[in-house]
Length: 326
Ligand SMILES: [Zn+2]
Picture 1 (tube, protein in one colour):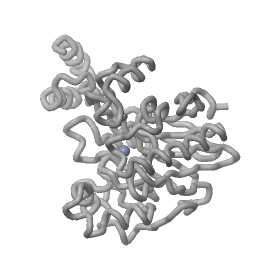
Picture 2 (tube, rainbow, N blue to C red):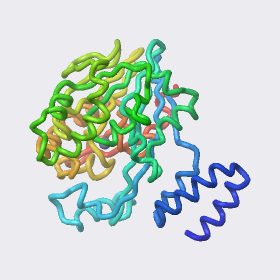
Picture 3 (spheres, rainbow, N blue to C red):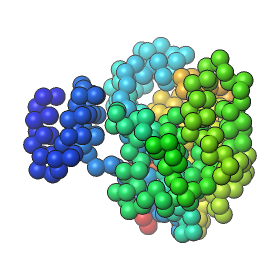
């Protein structure tokens, strides 16, 4: 770590004193994780076309954690979970969760799907969506529609900035069932109480500019919502279609590219209704594998786009290559 800091420090001094300061802050607040150096790197973005739609994926950040079995496969033993990770060339005792909001430029609208961690994540090197948009030539003012797949903190955190809407020219689209669940006063005193606070602070103030949809609801022509309940009560995924090309934004239907896809039945700590989430996972990825559809999963390894091949009891993640370029 020390050696890295010396090497990094020298490099950043040449590049920019401001960036060096941020790196130093990162070292202090997030010591001893190899990812902390991310602060000083330019934000990662990735651009490709789906028919006439331009798709821009932005890495809002990445968070390393230990004890994978306490999140993915909570009804399995740590040994079984570790063995599957090692069989896939991954460490048995740690994992990285990354966050991939998506901007879709249809030519008439600039549509952002989910907003990352926002200000709350910045101290830990997260919340880099706006920085990534800037790097790719967009501003927050360019966004005309913000779509929320569901209302967990890593998806709604970036809606507000300094107490004001972060995307001042946008209207919003989200699932009716999801919104109704989170704003219901009945959440008080339940495990959802904390999440509700985030929704009341970040989502509810924007409700006047919100369109609520259900299964089959359209965002704009060529972008259709599909109910994928389970991870959260009103979790929605979105199918993009332009010029005969398709991409499914699967949001949090599967949250680890090995553990959730290869073993869709394993219980996941983040899934609010574990049985419904597993059933939805199998239904959605069965469709994706059978129809050979490309998908983009919010927590898949960046740039988070690929295909699912049916294997044994689940699916193998196949990252995209040049399929969209030709
Ligand atoms: Zn998420």
